[in-house]
Length: 118
Image (cartoon, rainbow, N blue to C red; front, side, top):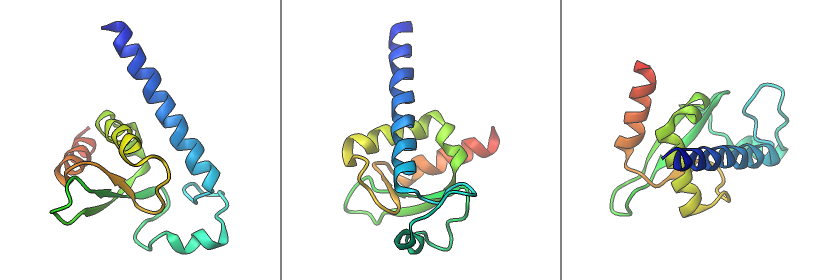
């Protein structure tokens, strides 16, 4: 069990590092002082403020996807990190704009409620 937990921890660290590198390479304005490419400035919707990003819950094609604007601190939540891993496996890191997550909207709502009560 300890080896499995350690392997999961290494995979999680690798996923976070990949996400950080991806965001840094695109120079998306997330933190104050980051430079944003001129053509990308219009890509960030007005409802996404500094320290936030947009997520789209897209589990099945029959239902309309639901968009969430979440705080960066959600990147620390274990359930959200599992969803990120699933998104990497299903969509890769070539997404632009809203981050598509392969889950039901209820899963994201549950994570957000858990973060509020923690």
